[in-house]
Length: 179
Ligand code: HEC
Image 1 (cartoon, protein in one colour):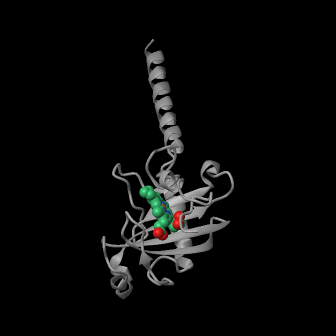
Image 2: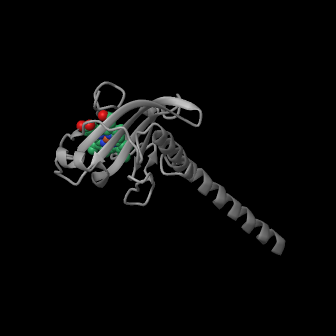
Image 3: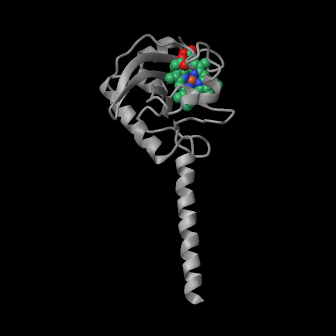
């Protein structure tokens, strides 16, 4: 009888463990895998000089309301873990109401975040055009949402707010606003 109880306990623990693993696999973004992928993406973009300390620069422009930020957007292609795809990198400068000239004079000081869309392999997220979404801080670490979830992956698939929800409203059918 004693043995059976121990057996039951061990079995229950095993079930609890595996359901946690399933849950983290099912979260649409912010998993360890998403973070690792984002890290590889950042490294690729650094090599392409789209992010980091030695970047190619363009003319920043005033962001559309309600953001009111100054932006810089790049359309390119990059390779992550052997997969090549279209990539869109948006540098977000602040604070609110900052002037374009002020940003140009010192980009590093005014960079608030880097938001990226990377076209992953077909089937990654067929519902949302296979985009991988990420929001980086200027040093390449991932920004987090108020719940502490890292902003990388399918953000936030199935939710009313977030990258996917808002970009679904973009014209042109590929979730991209600026084309
Ligand atoms: C509330 C709406 C909204 C949310 C949420 C949002 N975006 Fe955007 N995004 C926009 C708009 C509007 C633009 C066009 C801005 C511009 O360049 O004038 C844009 C532009 C972009 C671009 C440049 C390509 C394009 O679509 O024009 C990237 C990359 C991007 N967003 C990434 C992200 C990521 C990553 C997230 C989530 C962390 C996110 N966005 C969340 C509205 C949103």
